Image (cartoon, rainbow, N blue to C red; front, side):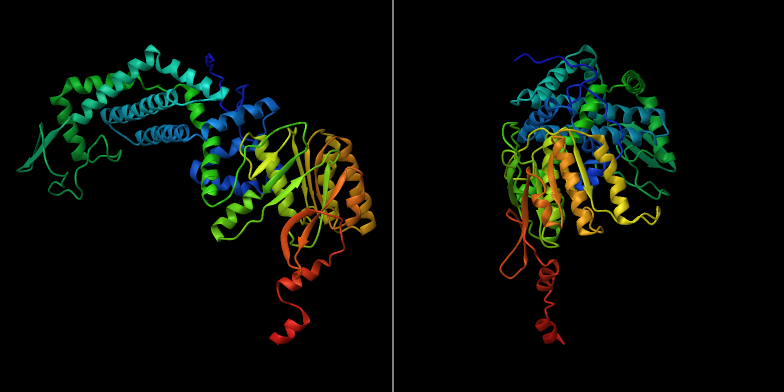
Length: 499
């Protein structure tokens, strides 16, 4: 297959090359507890990587584009090469920031060349690694062709030759500093031992080209002497530094920034898999309803991993003609966690990454909509019910078809009769738009409120303790307080024993 030539608008995140600017965090992002996941990611890969997790690809084709790229990124040699590339580009950025602190012109020129050299090495090593890699995705194959074209250009070859050549000479530079009778003599030549402190100096001398950017007056004086003794070397140094001050190719810099989206998730996935958590490449068959095995809440898993707690996984599957799960069961039985895990499954599939499950089929959904229970607003003076309705109204007015909807514990402060009527209207609205989703509720009557709704139940064991398992089944009246009383040993007999 012939690889396409690149354009300045190339993006490894989508085929259109759109610009990903700072975006307001969607409501569903917070409801699904995805901030816990991105906090984990950004701790190692920088805060700016978070912005790429706030966007859903606009089309099924862009979702597939990302999924194919991620398939290449996960390959061991590709992952290692890309990680090294990103670190070296970041290292060049660190040198740039340090360079701004350098007062001397010649010293600043060396720091500039170190920065440019790091960039050249990063690009060259990545190109060599990708040439030896079996890339399957359109995005990575296209990037490899672009990188090859850039590195084969006359400008890049000349820059790499000149910059690496002068830096080789700088590193080979050796000189001897002799201090005698309050006089300093600097001469080219070999010396042994470590840099030492001169008399009346508080700290040892340091290499003015490789240490901290700030040098002492003595070090600067020594450097001036060396420049006078080797004028040709430093004249070339200044010329090459000025010639390649603007060295970056914007497409490569954009790639180095965007590829962190895939690398950050891949690093987390590897860490979680080492602890026994499973991830799957989702199938996207439109001919099968959404289904999955071993589904779990990734945000909860990240938190529990540090605490050494177990995370319960669940299987699920919509059947032909079913569009909404209606989930009931005891308090603290895992209902909200299961609803979040479903939303996360759709989300990670939509952004082209592996999903936290053993296996899954996730057809394309245009968007995600969520409504989780809210508290009363002290600022507005509205009660809880009104706060919920204020947030629910724009969701229903949008009339967005084909979205995945997660509703968690609506209308808990309303009378049961009113809550049932409103809940039925909500289900009818979203099912009528062709949406799919889950409705977590305390009202068992909602499980039969619509022909395309199916009942799920959070299970208890024989001792009435929560198992956190979610199964199909007819909704039953479960005393919500009973399982809490049993869990915390607060029965009448148990209290009598303590007292």
